[in-house]
Length: 490
Image 1 (cartoon, rainbow, N blue to C red):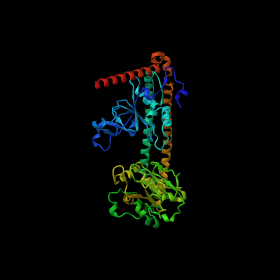
Image 2 (cartoon, helix red, strand yellow):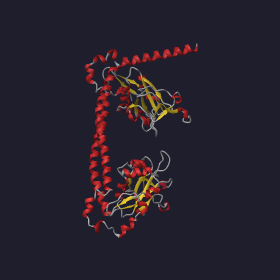
Image 3 (cartoon, one colour):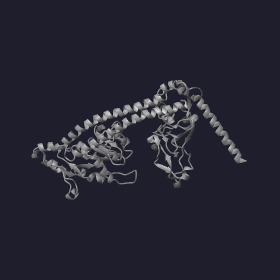
Image 4 (tube, rainbow, N blue to C red):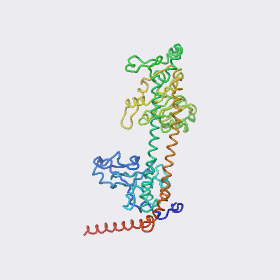
């Protein structure tokens, strides 16, 4: 559906398309087997490199001179738009010349078009919607070059393009300052939570409470708890910090079971259970999405990790482990769950507080130490099972475990309220950003400016005249190129 039929443009504007305002180039990738094609001489942009947006200066991968010669050179201030995959529509404006891979269509704008204007237009909600609508509806959405070139775009006169960029940049600068301040608050909240956890497992949060308890109520564990505690050998206690009175060092192997096994013959094949992929575990919060239900017959087709109600799940693979994907499984269908093979499962005795140990291992300190003990190859590093079994952990008497959890959650609830307010403000900021872009490309942002400068948006300065000029320049350049080829043949 063409935009001409639904949006009335301001005086001096007209509808155009990508191919009329510049040249559209689809990127290419030199043969990966040719090592001499890759290096640090020229940036080689891929969708993940477009996160900076405005402007993109660096790429993770680069090309050598020989590799660059086998691609299409993109000049500085090319507008790069991802046209394949989950990040379709992601856009960047290059600050340096380089090349891109085949997932990206680049717009090399005509000299009569402002590149920054095109960038902001490409990230505007209206054009992002056009990209989505025109992409093929497959598992991997694709917007081919032909469709991309024909995307309808509102085009103002050149002076107004500059004014629109100026207005957006001014508003975005103020908005970005506010967003940056909110992000700093979020980071402070994150640091606060870690500070609370550190104090909790050093015994500081419950120091006053512990003093008020009688020694026979707190310092002496009953026989059952003492047996479950199973202290680590003295050799394993070397260089470990001193703990509060009544606390001990132990490990998961001695107070529970790591990665418990199941007997597949003990389940009926039509039994429904919870299925938990890694993506359904939220980082650091402990929240999990238990909405996926599968039958045991499906589960047994592959090797999945088994767990039950009350088990602690700990992501063992990078980067999920470092990101803090830890959760307590609860509310599972029929009390049973299966999930990603990249989980370690910690099953504790019923005499221990799961939340106490959940908070212990969600500590950044714990995860950093686990990271140092990872094994494997780059991109596939994992925390070994034996490490999780034997890593020293603190053990407090059960009443104090409960009190520590209470104190942590009391403080976390306040942090959660602040974070919710910050998140709402960030959402509002993003809505405001989209509103600014929408108004800009409907002509509302520069409405007053047009009234004050009618001579800059009409007559010879109109967008229609601008397109005619671009068309004439293209025809002239084409004729000159053709003549050069003829002369070379002679």
